[in-house]
Image (cartoon, rainbow, N blue to C red; front, side, top):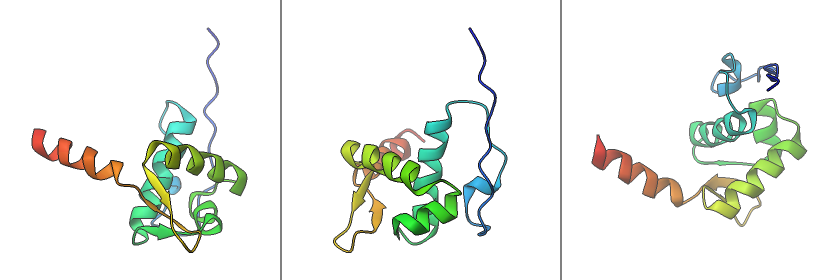
Length: 101
């Protein structure tokens, strides 16, 4: 099986963005999706697509595709002002993690 080379995303200008850290080996799309969740959280739970793209260093179309998937699964929600926020499914995961800690 061929190994894929690790690809890095340019570091964002904000120190709060997880993309400023080196990428861990693994599945790039999962890494990027988790970066999006962390950036939304670090910015008070709500960001626009352009802000997310800038903070994560992702192209806007890539960020949008990841967001659409996370919305469909309940991890992100699109707010009335078209910005994105953390979804309710994260509460369920957090509760389960706390109960097992």
